[in-house]
Length: 452
View 1 (spheres, one colour):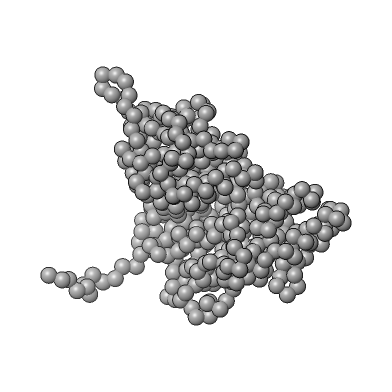
View 2 (cartoon, helix red, strand yellow):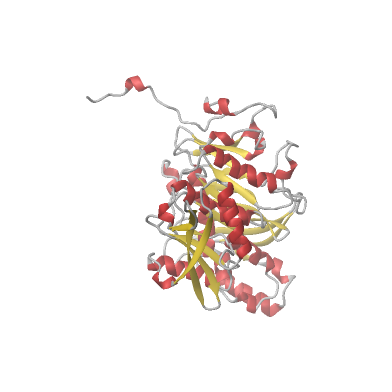
């Protein structure tokens, strides 16, 4: 679970901004809150609103950037590739900063780092409770590493290996990346906290964009008849007109996608450190097919998904995915997400949830999760323009967020919790009129030059 996230000097974020999933003062919709872990409870959903180019997608890109920097790292002697805030000359020479407060494996952590294009200047990990914090490790350019926490847990030889791993961490690499890429678990007994953070980024956090094709969500549709039936039931529930699915075996090597993407998929699924056993893959150009990949001991097996449609007079016709509507394909992308949400311990962040979907479907997707989420610690966080979600009948005030840009082009975050609003007030009209900000400010059309 994501407790809180902060970003500074990255893309459209200049000053430090904080996105918080810590519940506010409201007591309604208690099922929207997770079970407490060491005194900390977290909200299970959030909807982020904002005008076009306000920074919604940039917030999601920032969250994913940290994940990729940990899991993929930076090549030796290469710069850390990112964009700092461009509309302030001072920002070009300033460091950038990320911090993730997360809840995972029955513990709460604060992990973050300060960096620029050439080096990681600071990095830290603390275990936190509602009233205290314990340093796991800290790293500074001048002072080096503070690894004293591990001395209490491990033998002298094991601590020497941790110290060696720290000292061998390149300037442009995160310590967590170095830990992930080393064989440290074979030499050190107690580094559970480091592994927990890596596990959250690798196996709990999933970011989905409107054009996402390689879905990271783990979903055992390949050989599980019950899940195939559930997939079909949900396709019917969402009124897609599909009467069933069929899976045909194909060769993974013959799938028509770029070779570098295939290698990335193999590395992700066949990694001994990955808990994922299966994934989805769509054609990057035209969604011609929908591939389900299954991890086997030394290779990936693949099956292509076909949809069934009833033929008048009896029987079925099999359709390729390109024969289905954009909305149906979007629903098929999101159904595995919904199934994984109910497994628990997943965080899904979706940009433009409403793409190709009817407003009623968008509402029902969020309502479906919130209606069934009691006792399940997963999070469904979305960025959207769809105002149908903007209602206290569906969401708590602290689950509704806005991103706006100031006059200098910097993105700023604030929550509906900041406004003094009755719990029964209808919000949608006021939002569209701009009371809570996060809507476009249109110019005067009479000032436009209309060409003949």
